[in-house]
Length: 168
Image (cartoon, rainbow, N blue to C red; front, side):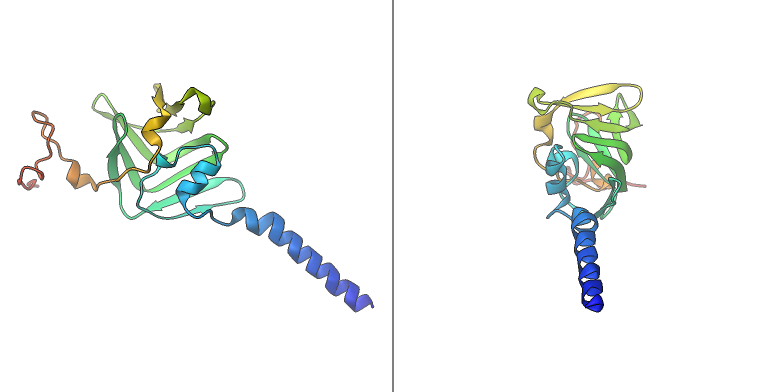
């Protein structure tokens, strides 16, 4: 009888462990689903996410195939690894994400959606806080490798699109 009670006790402990520790750490279907479940728009990260991890403290690490650029209101640069602490409506302590402002690349520090009904998202880029429309981030963007973003300042068309290869 004591052996049966001991076995039952171990089973209860194991089931409790699964329910309270392992299941909350299990991945959503995708990083974009995770963002939505945390009150953030799916389009904060590009389509081509290789993998991600989320620890029990809310530390998120996203792995991309390569560094890349995309554009929301301004150009945005994603490093191969993007990290942040995620909680409902917030990515705090962002690393690996920069935004172009007036020809300068500034690191994005925090991304916050205080009130989804306002239709605004706040980007803290250190020297300034930018409020952008949430509609810019509805869908995950395509993210292009850096070398495809070499722009001609005069025309705004990439040299590659005009049939020229960038010489290094």
